[in-house]
Image (cartoon, rainbow, N blue to C red):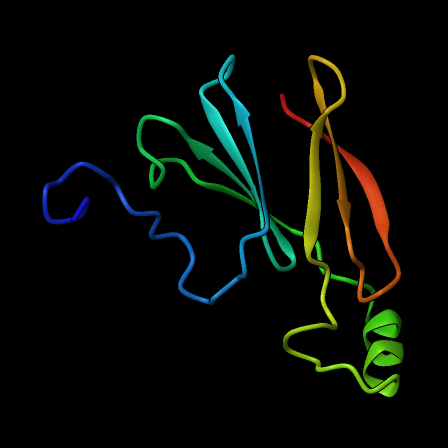
Length: 111
């Protein structure tokens, strides 16, 4: 219904089925951060398809191999699913992902 009434703008930046998991609204900068499978997207709030920035953050290859050896599905479980997007301070966001069952965290500078 929203599409038919032109009340929304669908995000076209991901046709790979990236399994979106978490969102962080940054009203001050007019951005939306989206955590997905192996990616973090920084989207413009006015037009989510304009100036899309994408950070590719996969799990380490050796962690993916260990995950597969443990009997997990390579496509749906052995990736770095971004689960946490949390403001840290005015310049950084704290980010955590599953890391193919070996969690990892880091900071993203928003400048």
